[in-house]
Amino acid sequence: MNAATTSISFKRITYIVIAVVVLLAMKMLWPFYSVPTGSRGVVTQFGRIVGIENEGLAVLLPWQQLAIFSIRAEQANIDNAGGSTSDTQPVSVSLTVRYSIMTDKVVEVYEKYSHNGDLSSYVQTATQEVFKAVTARYSAPDLIAQRAVVSADINAALQTKLALYGAQVINIDMRNFEFSESYMHAINDKVTQEQLRLAAENRLKTVESEQKQKVAVAEAEASAVRARADGDAYASLKVATAQAEALKIQNAALAQNKDVLELRRIEVERVKAERWNGQLPQNVYAGAPIPFFNVGH
Image 1 (tube, rainbow, N blue to C red):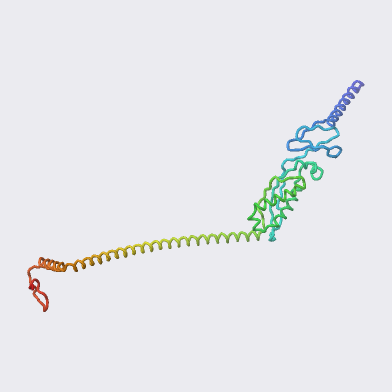
Image 2: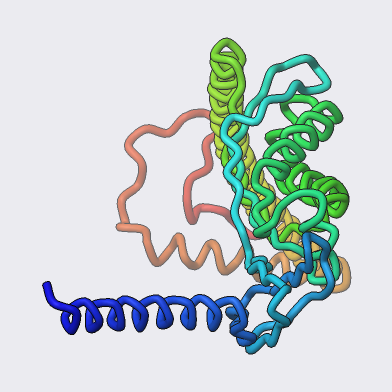
């Protein structure tokens, strides 16, 4: 290898070294940084927090560093959180807690708990403690019957608990409560008995309703019979009253004019004469009257 070739190789290596040094210098001295949406930039200087950058462009000094800290909604899954009811029934539940870091607590959280905003381990522990405390205030039946109230109590208690870590609860998804197998059998038996009782009550109400309908129909029919009887009695009374009144009038007329009776007798005799066939009775008994042989006095 001649001197010219050696000189060219040396220059090439020198250029490469210079380029690498320049790139390293630019990287070290580059002052422009970007903070993504839903995050905050924690600016540190020799390990000490000196500022918080909002979303967007951030300009730093060469000796400063930027850590991206998330304030987006995060999620913590708590499987089989365990507790005990006030009537000493073991109970468990699975929850999903969505939370976020409060923007005014970024420095505190960064210094004490997390450099990126992930507090899932703290949320899981806090949720377990809260669930135990809340379920201990309810009996097993109340825990099931007042699920919405229990959920609200857990939410309120967890809000207070997570505030100590600089976080806030967005919402809690709580699945069904799970009890011991023996207790679940007891609940199922109780539900079955309750359903049978309600069915029996419904059947009894149906029978009572049918009986009431029959009584109502019978009472209506009896009322109709009484009404008809009253009507017939009233009609008979009216007829009897009319007949009595007629007799009264006739008697009064006869009392005033006795010839009327004689006229009626003569009318009767006339009718008999018109109907007589002209034959005398073959047998005449002692004391029996002989028609049309009466001799007037």
